[in-house]
Length: 102
Ligand SMILES: [Zn+2]
Figure (cartoon, rainbow, N blue to C red):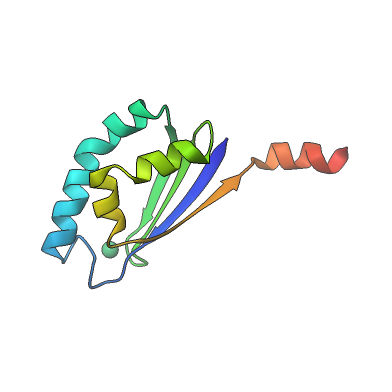
C-alpha cells in the first residue's frame, strides 16, 4: 500500500536555523534506513520545499501498522517532535482510473 506523508515545521524549528532540530534531523537521517529495512517499508520518493518548510514522502508499506511502528522509534519520535505530520493512504492515478471504469 502507498502512503503519502506530509510534514511541516515552522521557520523557528527549521533545522537550517535551529540547532536542536538540526541534531534531530541528523539523528533521523542516520537511522531511517535501518528502520525502513526493519519494518520492510520502501520510500517511493521524497521531496522538500525549502521556502515552505515542507517535506513530502511516499512510502510503500504493508499496512499502517508498519508506519506506526516506524514512528515509535526514538529517533523518529524525536524528529516528529518538531514537525506536524499527516499520513494518508493513497492509490496511483492508474488504479483510480480502473476503479472508475468498473
Ligand atoms: Zn525548514
